[in-house]
Image 1 (cartoon, rainbow, N blue to C red):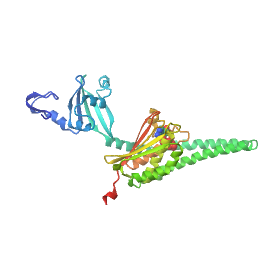
Image 2 (tube, protein in one colour; image 1 turned 90 degrees about the vertical axis):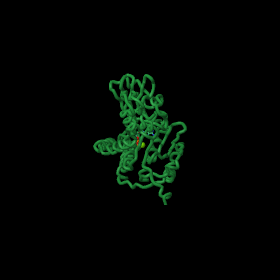
Image 3 (spheres, protein in one colour; image 1 turned 180 degrees about the vertical axis):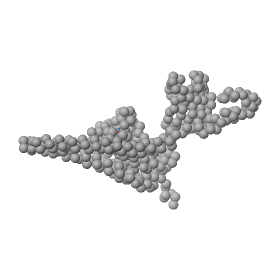
Image 4 (cartoon, rainbow, N blue to C red; image 1 turned 30 degrees about the vertical axis):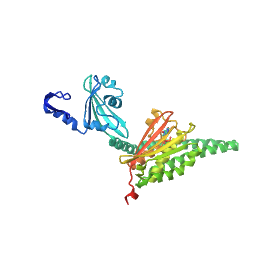
Length: 360
Ligand SMILES: Nc1ncnc2c1ncn2[C@@H]1O[C@H](COP(=O)(O)OP(=O)(O)OP(=O)(O)O)[C@@H](O)[C@H]1O
Ligand SMILES: [Mg+2]
């Protein structure tokens, strides 16, 4: 019997209305483009799950599987009954998609869940956020002032001390002071070089790039550096993820910044390894860079994309900001998952390219 259809006047168990033929209410819920799930927590059963909700989770969960749905959506079911608010909204990563859902407490026995696929929204939000970060020019300028101001102050102080003591200091000490100044100057120079990459790719030259060819070229450039540090690089490129739509120079800069971070995180680690995998999901290409390095604390992860945030003595804290900006200009996204002392996974996605050779 179809959902909500009754032979005689019967009480529909879902809407509690008495009907002949059809229960209009249940049919509306059944066919709406929003996942709807009703749970009876006391009996541990699913009282209702519409088509949309079945489809949403069908890759891992059978229809009306109470235990599996709870494990996925309500791992801490108590919170819905103890919370002051009658509803709680969350976003969940499900495979390669994001599901947004709100759980309503109907009584102390029933929960009602609305769920929908928000992958596209999450992607657009992360692009908007990147653009917003970059538009925050005042913030960036104050960072630059600080980063350049510090070495300049230190140069000024060193030179004044040197000037006042030039006749009494031995040559060795004078050279030490000069070296100190030169080090500070190199720091400013390096910072200026990094800042150049902000404007370097203002106008992206987007094209279809063959990933295996790109990776081969890119890795041949960096591999000796990594080998010297004892870091193994493994790659896996899925056949279907062969083409990506991007600016190859910008993509190279993105990969370089991510790999440099991985290499820094692998310093003094046992069996240091970087695993690069490329997959295709829907119409996007996903590049994952996984390292078994030092990982990050929750606090570090929160600040990751803030300009000038760095935990390294010689870092600028601009590496990932540049990555995010470049990806945003290529309609790309970036996500970082990390566990302290275990390692980090950086996942970027870009629109897929088209295989022009195969089309000819
Ligand atoms: N793979 C990683 N493993 C552990 N920590 C990381 C990783 N990637 C980034 N981080 C953390 O994020 C911070 C910011 O990274 P980002 O690349 O923006 O700047 P940086 O590496 O510190 O400086 P720069 O890129 O100029 O050398 C780093 O200082 C580090 O603490
Ligand atoms: Mg970096």
